[in-house]
Each structure stands twice: as C-alpha cells, then as structure tokens.
Image (cartoon, one colour):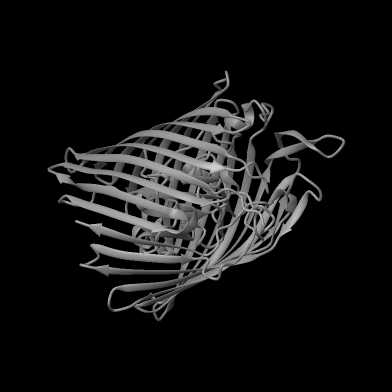
Length: 612
C-alpha cells in the first residue's frame, strides 16, 4: 500500500493549453503525449504571471469546454464548476495531488475562492471520468492544483503587487531556498476588493450597495532529503476568506459570509530500484459562518491519506497499487455526522505492441454508509506514424463512478434527506489527436455520460405558488449528456501562438442541466516581441442557458454572451522583474451570468512581480 504522487497530468510547455512532449496523465507516470489516452490542459505559473488579477475561476473559464458559473460576478461570488455537464460534486479538486474536500459545504467540494492564484505552480485539468484513480467525486473531471515549493538552491524572495478596478488589490510574498538537505518555502498573501453589488437592481436608476471581499492566506512547506532514496516533506497553511452577499436575485441585503481553514500535511517518499513507495497525508479543519437574517455556523473536518507503490516492469508495463483513506465529519447545530471511505485500487499502463497502449484501473469503494462498490476504467489508444513528422492518435475510454451524497445533503437541519442513495455514472469517450511536428495540434472528442440516482435540490411550493422549503432528493430516470469538443493549437513561429476551441452539448433532459451552456467556443492569440513584451487577446463565448427561478414564469432563458480580454506583460533582468496588466471585458459587454445577479463591466488590473 503506497501513496501516489497524484499529479494528474500535463502537457509541458508554457501556454494556456499546454501541449508538450511529456505528460503525467491519468496513469500518473511521465508519458510521451502521443501515447497519453486523454486530452489534458495545463496552466503554468508563467501563464498566471502574464495575466494580472485573474482568480483561479477566471483562469479555468478560459479553458475549452469548462464553465465556472459565477466567475464574472463580484469577487467572492459562489462558484459552480461544470465539466461535461457535471456539477461541483462530480469534479474533484486536488491540492498537491490529494482531494482537500470541505465536509461543511453542500457538495463536499473544495472552495476555489480560498486560493490565491499567485501561490500556484500549475493547474492541470483532466476531462472525463477518473474515479478509479482518484476516488469518489471524480466522475466528470479532475482539477489538479500544484502549489509552489522550494526549487532554488539559494534563498529567493518573490514579491508581487496588483491593483485595479473596484479598489481591488492583491499582495503576495514568499521566500524559498535550501540549507543543506532542507528545502523551505514560506509565503503569505492579502487580497481586498470593494467589489460591485452581488445582486442586480433590475433598474438602471437604482444602485445597490457594493459587496466586497477579503482573503488572508499563509503557508509553509519544508522538505528534508535524508538520502538520495528517502525524503520527507510537510506543509501547514491557513486561509481566512470574508465576503459580503445579498439576499438573492434582485434583492439587496447586508449579509456576510466567512470561511476559515487550517491544513496540515505530510509526504514521506522512498525511491528504490524500479519503483517508488509514497504516502500523502493531509488533515484540514474548516469553519463557515453566515451572518444574515438566517444565521448559521457549520464546521467540517477532513482527513485524507493515500499510500501507493508505483513499479515499472521492463520497459512497457507500469503499475500503481495503493489504498486511499478518507474520513469526513460535519458539525451543525447539535449534530456531528461522519462518513469514511477505505478504497484499495490498482492501475496498469501497458505498451502492448507497436503504437498500441492500454491503460486500465480498478477501485473498490468501501463507504461506511453505503458498503462496497467496484468502479473500473479502460483507456486504449493507438498512435499511427504518418511520416513527415506527422502522427495521428486514436483513443477511447470507458469508466464508471460512484458518488456518495455529502454530509450536508444527508443531514442538513433544513434541507437534508437521510434516505438519499449514491449517484452512479457511466462515461464513454472517443477521439483523435493530430500532431503536425511542433507547429499544429488538433484534438477532437465525442463523449456520452449518464447518471443514475442523480441528486438534486427539489423546491416545495404552497397552493399559492410560494416557495416554502425544499430538500435533496434522488431524481428518477437517467441524467444524460453527450457532446463534441474540438480544440487546436497553432504555433507558426517562436513569437506567435494561436488557439481555438469549440464545445457543443446535447442534454437528455434540459431541466436537469440548468445554467450550463449548450455551446462554448473561444480563441486566443499570444505574441511575444523581441523586447520581452508579451501581448494577448482572449475571447470566450458562452451559449444560451436555462435557469430556474422562484417566481412566475419559474423558468427563464439566459442569452448567450461573449467576453474579450486583453493582456500585456513585459520582462526585465531575465524575468526577475515582470510588469503585467490586463483589461477584462474590453467591449464592456452587458450580460447575465447568473439570473438576478450582477456581472463585472469593463475593468482593469496592473501588477508588478519582482524576484531577488
């Protein structure tokens, strides 16, 4: 049993949709991109440095086929993650390779608002089912966030400062280095904004009060190399997030929301001939408080441990065998329910013959409330060499997932339903990737995902049509979505990089996919001048969506919209001094992201990053 360096991926290059030569895909081994069985997207620290003021949600919203609902509202707005029709509970968020769930939240998901983008080394996104590798909740996709760690042999200080619209500012500082066998990183950040009103007044002559936010973070990471074979790292972090919020759609109110979180982790790793034995452990405590006409306080505790052993047989078979342990508890009012998973798993990657590669895995979900359930996946791919430095990859996958209800959905004093059954999903996908030397890469995929026992919030109305409450229930029938996703990257020269993407989805029952656009497309252009100046244009178009509301007509159609952003950065002293700036929503598009709530008009950020 061994913990695995669950790094989901990646394509190694320094741009928005990274398509490099080596990836660490779902099999968790470094693999030539041509032999990977998935399409994976990566955002690096260099990308983040070039785009002043972007939050993690903003960054993810620029990627193909990914929709972060709420990203265009006032800073501090609630976020919904939609990958291939999945909701927050279907998209697993990893921090340094481990799920850092929040048992106090509705979906047991990690809250991306807690992270300052300046703390991130890279973000990698895998679309499609990955529960055999990462456990429950990885039913539609995985967002893996790798935080910065010490990489410098000498002390290095990084300072960054950003200011912009809505009296926003973001300050980040860290110091890293090495003393003998000890590597260290210590960092802190402060983010503040007066924001805009969360709720839309619905009348241009009426102005609601602004809803701002603040975030304070601090973290440290230490690594000690006892020998060439054995190392031990540990981390400690603290986040405090405060946000104003309104009473609902078109309803101004002076409410406040606060999250505080403390996390502690350990990662011993032992390398031996042909393999690696590793343990990843993390414990976090979180507290949520709502200060409003309906005040509430909830607390959550989350323990994650993953012990894995990876081993390579010869040159063509790579294996991972491990066990993952998760323990959640949720405190609200006088109750303190808990739940746990103990999941053994195995994954194999086999270069069979010629261009054929097989990836497959098996996991036994052992849940304290719902017993044992098998999930499995198979992911073959074949690489054709077409000559003239041109290659064509054909790939496909089939996977299952088992998603347990959150403790909030089961035991919330207002909306819980202890009779809920777990969700089960099946996902199938197939596609091709075309590589024309290092100039052009094209990916095309089709997928179909089906959920049974889907969990949804069901509103309850009185005879007069007034909302009087609700609870979480299993939806009858099958929740189905299928679609196509296309993207390309073209690099005609060292200085110019162009990307384009398109996604189109078909919903089996549109009423089960509220607020998710049926189409999304976008394009980017990045040009680097010889002076070290980088210019960027980013355009994203989101299609029509349907939204359920609590009054007549109870269902509205939200019009499509497009957002154009402009970015600029300039490097001096070999990249040790970086000026950056951005204008977001350049065309000042007036659109509705979430019904009844405001979206940001044209706005700007400017920043400076210095390394000493």
